[in-house]
Length: 387
Ligand code: COS
Image: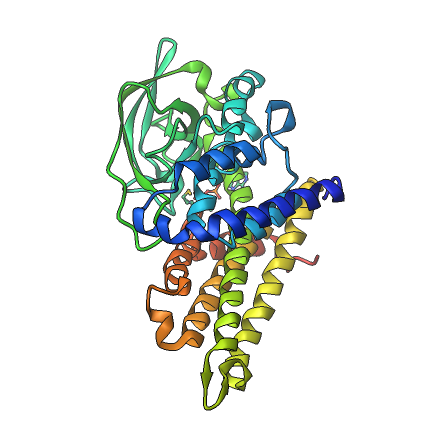
C-alpha cells in the first residue's frame, strides 16, 4: 500500500539522489577501510533512514511494506554495507519491539532506534544453533526482578556498533524446543556482555558481524518482550518474515545495479569491431537477468501488498527471499562473465558485488530453510497456493 504517491515519490527521489551522489562514490573507500564514513552515517540519521519502518508515533516514517520495498530497491543499488548499518534498525533490530513489545517498551526504545541514536541488533544464531534456531542454548534464568543471561551468540550483524540487542534465550530449560524460548531487549553496555572481534568475511566490507558473549548478564524483567515467557521464538519468526521480504528487495536493488553496470560495460567494450552488447550470446545473459529481475521485483511487491493488507505472508516471504537471492546470485555470475577478464579485477565494482551478494542466499534463513518452510506448508495444505 502506498499511502500518498507524492510523498512516496519525494522520498524515492531523495534516496535515488543520495545513492548516486553520496553512496556510490564512497563504495571504494568503504571497501578499503571496512568502515562507513561517519559523515555518511550522520546524513543517514538526518534524513531519517534509521526510522523508516518505526511507527510515526515513535518518531519514524512508519513506512508500509510496499513503501519500504520500493525504497529498498533504490537504496540497495549501492553496496549492501550501506543498507546494513541502518537495516537492523528498520528490520530485525527493531521489529521484535514493534510487533510484540509492550506499550512501555515501545515508548522507551523505539524513538531512540528511529533517530539512529541506538543501533539495534538481533541475537538469535549461536555456535551450535543456526538453521535449527529452536535448539538455541543461551539461558535466561529468573532471579528476583532480573533474568540472568548466559551463552554465546554468533555472526551477529552490527554487534560491534550495537546499542541494543533483541536477544532470544531459553527461559524454560525443560522445554527443549521453540516453546522454551523468550525474547529480551538488552542494552549493549550492560555488565556481562562482551562483543568479539569483527568476523573476517568474504565480502560486505563496512558491514560487521561478531560474537556476543553473555556472562551472568542481568536483564530487568521489564525487558522481556511482550511481558510473557515462551513467545520469543514466534517473535523471532515474525521478525524474519518481514526481514525476508526486505532482503528480497535488497537482492533486486543489487541485481539492477549489477545489470546496469554490465550494460554500460558491454556497450563500451568493443571486440570483433563492435560493442560486445551487440552479440547475441551476451544479450542472452542480459535478457535472462532482466527477466528474472522483473519476476523477483513483481513477486516482492505483491507479497508486500498482501502484508499491508493484513495477510499472513510467511510462505510468500520465503518464496521471495529464496527466488530473489538465487536470482541475484545468477545475475552476479552472468555479469562477471559478461565483463570477461575485467570481471575478475577489483577495479570494477562487479568483482566486489559478486562477493557481497553471496551472503543474501545465506543470512535470514538459507535457501534450503526457505525450501523447507515452503515445502512443509504445501504438504500441510495438500494443494498449491493459488493467488
Ligand atoms: N510466524 C509466527 N509463528 C511461527 C512462524 C512464523 N513465521 N513460524 C513458526 N512459528 C511458530 C509455529 O507455529 C510453532 O508454534 P506452535 O508450537 O504454537 O504451533 C512454533 O513457532 C515453532 O515452529 P516450528 O515447529 O515450525 O519450528 P521448527 O523448529 O520446526 O523451525 C524453522 C522452523 C526451521 C523454519 C526455523 O527454525 C527457521 O526459520 N530457521 C532459520 C533461522 C534463520 O533464519 N536464521 C538466520 C539468522 S537470523 S539473521
